[in-house]
Image 1 (cartoon, rainbow, N blue to C red):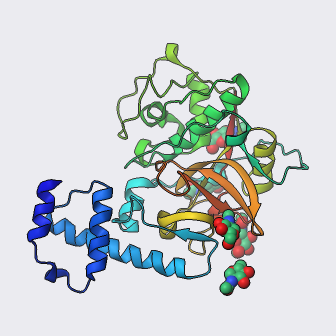
Image 2 (cartoon, rainbow, N blue to C red):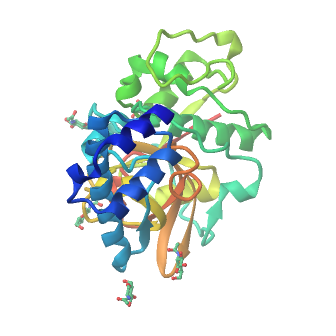
Image 3 (cartoon, rainbow, N blue to C red):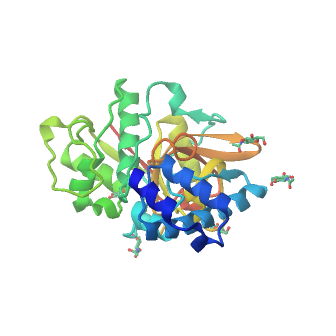
Length: 325
Ligand SMILES: *[C@@H]1O[C@H](CO)[C@@H](O)[C@H](O)[C@H]1NC(C)=O
Ligand SMILES: *[C@@H]1O[C@H](CO)[C@@H](O)[C@H](O)[C@H]1NC(C)=O
Ligand SMILES: *[C@@H]1O[C@H](CO)[C@@H](O)[C@H](O)[C@H]1NC(C)=O
Ligand SMILES: *[C@@H]1O[C@H](CO)[C@@H](O)[C@H](O)[C@H]1NC(C)=O
Ligand SMILES: *[C@@H]1O[C@H](CO)[C@@H](O)[C@H](O)[C@H]1NC(C)=O
């Protein structure tokens, strides 16, 4: 870090004159905060991307939107880079999900938050640079469902799913679906703990040891495609549910408030990120889902986000599922 700063100090700032001094100072303090260590060429490239992101964020925040944006750990990346590092690249066909979850039709409470009902939700995790969100959505859901059933909240292994669940149409760091991961756990007869099969963020050889299985799946419940009321019913009457939706460039910079987008699609074939709905509510006249993400706890609202509910926003009702234990 120290040597990199020396290089920065020696490079004439004039070469990036179209950027203001203020932009550059902000970039330097952001880079220090996020332990970024660039070479000179990278420094100017990242400074430019950072500044473009910052302008987008400022413009958005100056408008009248239901959510705000902020700088975060992704602020020196273009959306294209972000997409390759963090989202699915293998298309997932959610329409294949034939719903077997039977909704009770309510009535349902106005708001639910499984984090407040007891010790049912593990701390936010970080998938790092690997499109393994589907494994975090899967473990998050199974952790909660198991804790609700047994009273014991145990962090479960994403790596087992990254390394071992390929036969169920999953692709390690290149994507997968929670419903297919639950099927894998059901047929492989268990999932190990995070401690016994730790996360590495790269696909490796499957070293699943059935004797160390700590969580089990008896059955997989798929909510019918686009049945968002069915998702409300499941969260209100059973447990948190896994869902997938389409992340577009604006979501990278999400800070707080209820996320809505006109950039994303509401179809089954565009979803590229899986997460976990731990509750829902209503604020300022807007219905929303409370969702646990897997980009660390410094992103969004302590690692969570709110997204508009009731409109199949960004296809979030396209492939929702949860396990029965
Ligand atoms: C901001 O948007 C909200 C909801 O769309 C609207 O009710 C409010 O009047 C708007 N405020 C301004 C200052 O435009
Ligand atoms: C997606 O699944 C549907 C229903 O099973 C099928 O008709 C369609 O061909 C599939 N699309 C792709 C791209 O696999
Ligand atoms: C649930 O979805 C998974 C994967 O999408 C599928 O393999 C399974 O057959 C579905 N289960 C039911 C009962 O429809
Ligand atoms: C609701 O509005 C208040 C006041 O404008 C704001 O502070 C709060 O963040 C809003 N809540 C949501 C969920 O957008
Ligand atoms: C998708 O959005 C369009 C336009 O708003 C709407 O007409 C359609 O019903 C939506 N489809 C689904 C499945 O939510």
